[in-house]
Length: 387
Length: 185
Image 1: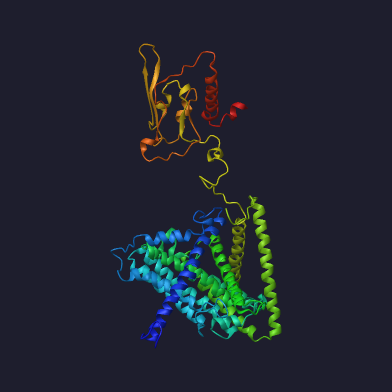
Image 2: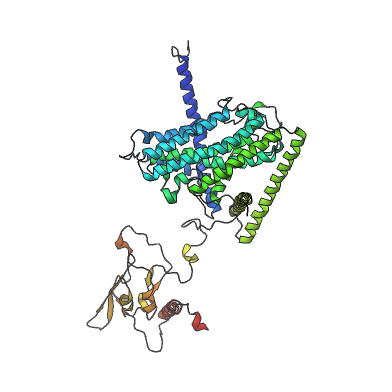
């Protein structure tokens, strides 16, 4: 820089400092509250689904619970066991956290609201989320503890296995969009559900569920949370961790939930696409952000919901589900989508409309089932979210 | 069943059971939580919501206690200690102490079953938090209390009549295993 506040400093250094500061601001203003509020919301939703109340004391309806938990964890003693690997043990949480945080680089919150629209965006995302495996394996091995090691090994096996159906599902969408860029994939879709890749043809509809299941498994979420199965492995790879480092693992886990939702939204649900209602660029950006955020958060809610519903699978069931069911099915869906790409657009649209109709019918049927379950239990009706 | 059919059936089962399970959990969002948010956020005192015949902390009505020591003898863990002395001039026997150690009490109810007047009984109180074990010893005779002597032909003093009746009602209800239902028949 020739003049100004940074006279004499090489421009690379100034840019590097600027990038670090931006990352810090993004981390503290968006990602930390997001992961925190998700952790609180998950506990509330989960509690209500089990006829409990959940945390409701810290702040209005307990919304500041995550702050209290975070402060408590940060102020705790940072214990590193004597027998643990003194270098890898402290490092592991940061590797996991980095794998999660790097994925925010390519998440498109709006037409212009993206850190970097990489031309290999989705490939980059698959690559950096694999970094989490390294961190988990590191944590499991360096803890020098049998539970941790078993948890780490299970996690590695699980994530590597589920990378295949997830990757094949992504590939299906990449075929349709013709690009790996996140913005390119969104631009290939429209704002209406009939233009989403989810309802492109019946195969992409199935692909969506395969992708979501595989993403849940990659994010170590229940029902696929065998790496940290409390009933068998104490806490898996986080057994020896406490305080701040423990917090980082769970920060990454809850933040990852949002990343799963965001990627699912980008690939299958039209991302930030909004109806052409306004020309004001600021208003449009806000609308796009809100649309994207709500769509992504809906899938976060579904993940919480699944966690409250399904029991944990066994290790052999987990592997059987992946290799015997999801991998072949995602192959079939990919080939089917390729078949549909040869079809004329008119003919394809009929199948798309049928898929959309099937989805709507399923949702209606679902709410009828909910009504039936509610009536058959004869409970006291209480719809309010607060208590 | 063929291999392909069972394979497809597995997929169908997974999808339909997940669908059904998720509809059940979603319907819970509209149900009222079972949790009682003790001690605040409850409309009535929690003691009033406890079930009938709830075995809370023991209480003794010293006005109708005859000092027969049946409870002290029946207590399996000797958490009840009773001291009785006699005034040499008036020949009146009195309690020097009547202590129940709530730390030891296991709420078996044997003392209240053997009590002839229903003086010792379970209250609905259960909040026994204390900073030291000594705080959990209940002293029912801080000063000397005279023993109760049942009169022939029933109690005449109006203050004691109600107390005797309460004790009798408790005995009828508690000391019989079915709560007195068999006698009513």
